[in-house]
Length: 144
Image (cartoon, rainbow, N blue to C red; front, side, top):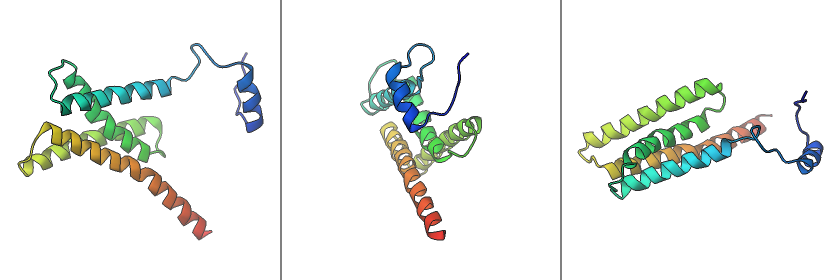
């Protein structure tokens, strides 16, 4: 039987040097996040270069859903995992639709413009998360 406990700083250093975790029990989250980032970046690159590749459509769609969803999910850390995924995917779809509708309203529709707009808005949302957290910490420190 295996004990599962919280590692403190002293036990983490001794346990990690004894036996590295390998096999089916290791955490694949960083590997999957890296693969998702690569697929999204390739999709954006294929769309911006107007490539004739068969992967252009699926990879670009993946980018258009995952980039804003990741930014929104980072801002919603307080929700349970299912609610966070649901809200972030819905927010990504809403952001994509708002960008498309805004570009159509001003008669400036283009694929590269849409990809660029979604990228910029997602990056801004993702960069505002640490700013908001830092501001929340300083407000709590000043209030106490």
